[in-house]
Image 1: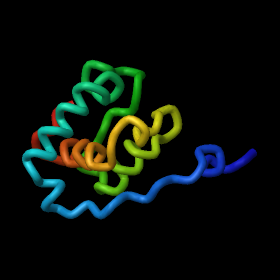
Image 2 (image 1 turned 45 degrees about the vertical axis):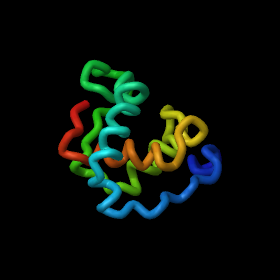
Image 3 (image 1 turned 30 degrees about the vertical axis):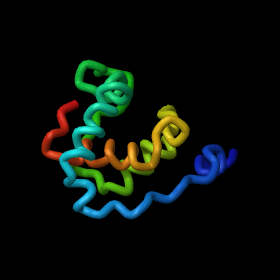
Image 4 (image 1 turned 135 degrees about the vertical axis):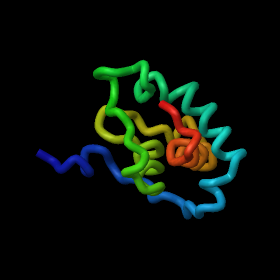
Length: 102
């Protein structure tokens, strides 16, 4: 059987994710809006148990979150066709922010 990476195809690398962008209030607010519209259905606190893994943002690096959102992972679809790279960065900013509440 092929390795998972071969099945999934090539993964786009994350852009630079500097702290000033990840701490930007406007980016965090945009990410919160996108999260509520799209992500919370599977990853939100009301989606448990079963839909998707419970997020543990304190364990994640920005590049990891960006990769999962942009490229997808296992049953999670890639959002690179739906979200601009800037929107994905906003989701990362929100998930890793103190404001994040699934």
